[in-house]
Each structure stands twice: as structure tokens, then as C-alpha cells.
Length: 343
Image (tube, rainbow, N blue to C red; front, side, top):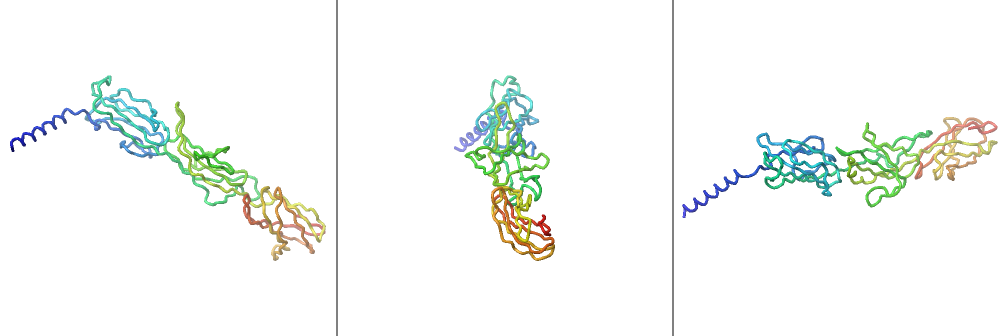
């Protein structure tokens, strides 16, 4: 019985050694690499996740062992993302096209080193699957309300958004719209304007000419190919409450004979609405005396009648608490009263 057991163990060991000697070349014969998010080639491990949108797959050999091989490359929709490799006995690489986020598959079939036509496969195909998860980050301004220009200037100032893209992308698409509405795909439904990433700063400057509530979204573009161009998902929307400064375009005297005077004020921002508090003081250091408040009418205008019984130089203060389109602010204006009022 002991002899029989030894015989069976010896037979099993011999069979295992025979199988090892006769086994075809294994995965160790091929060295497969892929560019990581830093652009460096690293071993391609099944299940890897990348943000790189056009990685390069390299296929090489162990220095002591060579085989011939063919290879194919497929995207999440099972469509080829690179030219297949027919029958190679040298190391080579392929850059993969981006066809959306999801699993990408590299399939390699091995052949004998002398099988120059690759007619007789050796072993099962080697299948490597990894994931591309391209995404874009868009950062809003630090303050919820942002000015579109400086006071007393007609030149718009950029509202700068932070932006972070992906390695290997073919560009970025940034869209914004006044009172924009987000559609089912995460983009802006209806008309929108396009902004661009500054290649020097890596940020997105927006020059908004009209105050209001803006919605901004962005996504990365894959490199365009003969089979189309694909995009990452849109970012969550960034909301910008853009406002104009409270500043005065002109002051016109409607009744210049005292002691009762009447003026009309034109604000530079025609959409401003609300009430403006007005106060006046004589000279540069006197105490302000309230003249009450007045409602801003259509086209950013308001009028005010007030009484001044003494001549001299005065300072008038206009104070506004802010509205949906106009920032809070205070404006001072000097004028002189002799027999007439002169701003």
C-alpha cells in the first residue's frame, strides 16, 4: 500500500514537470505597458483606472524570451480605438483614441517565435482591461456676487474661473448662458456662448457685458479622429451672479433756480432697480443731512427735488443697498450753489 502511494505521487510529479516543460510561452514573455496620468509608461495591470484620454500601450519582450503576437484595442462601445497589430515579432506601441469613459480592452494573441504568418495560436489570448475616467473640474469665483466692470469704467473686467482638465485631452469646451437651464445631458439647454481656457494661465476668463445670473459648464474633448470626437461628461454647473457697480453716468439740473432745486440722475447701469438714499453737506467736512430716498425708475433714472438756502460748495451722497443686477455702493458728487446750482 505504501509502495502504491509512492508510485502515485511520483507519477503526479512527473506529469506536472512534463506539463511545465511543454507549456506555451506565458504572459511573462510579453511586457505590456501604458502611459499613466503623469505621461510615464507603467506596467498595464488589469483593472487600472486612468484619467489620461489618449494613453499609449506598449508591447515588448522579456530579454530572454520572444514570441510573435497580434493585438487589438477596443473602447467601451467595443469599437477599435487604434490600428490592430497583425503579426509582429518586434516591440511596438499604439496610441489609443478616446471613445468616452468606461472600460478599454487590449487583447493579445501569442504565436511561436518562428510562426512568421501567425497561423498557430499559442495558448489563450491575453486580455487586459482598464478604465478611462476622464473628468473636468470648474471652480467658480470666490465671491457669490462678482462685478463685471470697475466703477466709472465702460471696460469689462474678466471673471476668472479655475479649470482642471485631463492629460491627453484634445481640448476643452466651456459654455455659459445668462439665466441658463441645465438639460438632461448636463449641458446647457438652448443657446449658449463659448468661453476658452487660457493656455498660459490654465484658467477660464469670462467677459460678461450684461449683469445677471449666469450658468457655466465645461467638458473635455477627445482628440478628433476619422470615427468622430467624444467628450467627457459635463461638469456640475457653476453659477455666477454678475453685477454692475453702482455708478453715475450723469447728473442733469432740471430746475437750477433756488432755493428749491430739481435734478435728474442717470445711472450707468440701466437695469438697476430699488431706492437710493440721498444726503447733502455743506463744504468738505460738514455733517450730512438726509434728503430722503428716491425710487429708481425705468432705464436707471431718478429725479430729486431738494432745498438749499445758503450758497457755497456742497457734497451730495448717493447710497444704494444693491439689487439683482447692481452692487451696493456709495457715490459722492460735489456741486456749487450761487444763484444757480452747478454740478
